[in-house]
Image (cartoon, rainbow over all chains, first blue to last red; front, side):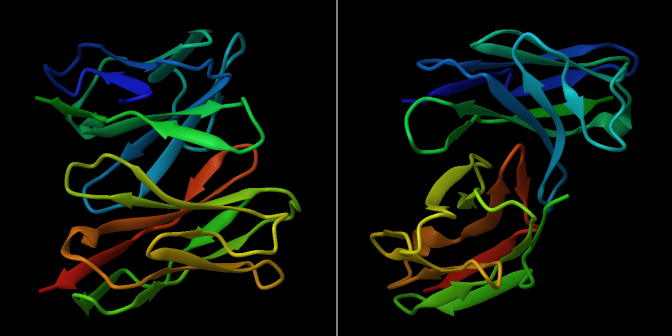
Length: 117
Length: 111
């Protein structure tokens, strides 16, 4: 079964509203979660790295006041798109890092398609 | 900052043939992991294969294998006996502190 749950899968909202996307690790504690944005037929662009209990690290060009990230617990990170506009319409994907064991393990959510009208 | 380059935007191959997808990367780190991910039309990211940089032996997973050349910073993926279900976008990725993806290769398997 899925080890990372991302909700919602689809969201349509009016311009100016805020949208929250949740990313949960189901059977492990994720000290680090990554948030990505993907435009059609393009690669995943890292937006920010979310570490539990500390402020997120944003990539260059990503507005931290626009894309609020909260990693309040070891199993939950949220991305809030504030005052969404049509140009924010995109596919957003989270990834959680499982620090346990000797191997590097990363698990992806199923993504959220955001459409801003 | 690390970069990941995939020089083949699109590739196509006949079913049952072998295809190799190329990937190069740039980093100053010595300890890291490399991945190949598959993204079908569902857009779910699926791990294909993983390679630890400290291991010289190339990783293999059934029909998938890699050619890891650490000195050249090259990490190609070979798909043997290709199947129709292999049709997807393939992303090479690198991780040390953060996970960085290449631009992707759209692979089409022709019946």
